[in-house]
Image (cartoon, rainbow, N blue to C red; front, side, top):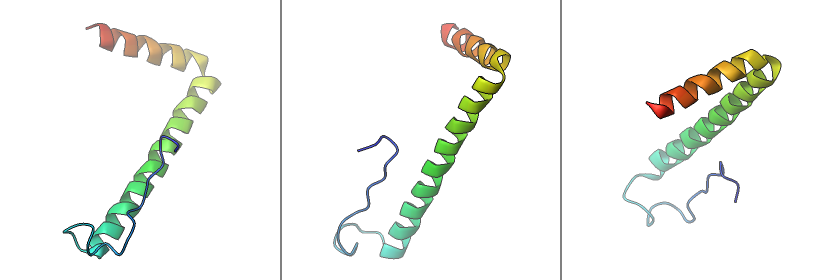
Length: 69
């Protein structure tokens, strides 16, 4: 299964968890939206790193500096 994939619970939801099924559906949709957002954010960062190499270098330097301290 891909890293960003979200699995839906099997069944009606009434027997699976103590939360109401409406709340479960909202949770699933919220997780899907979050996964889409994070995927698009990663794509935008990758595009920025490719289009402006100096920005990618600076970001990498900052990340390494943050890890070393």
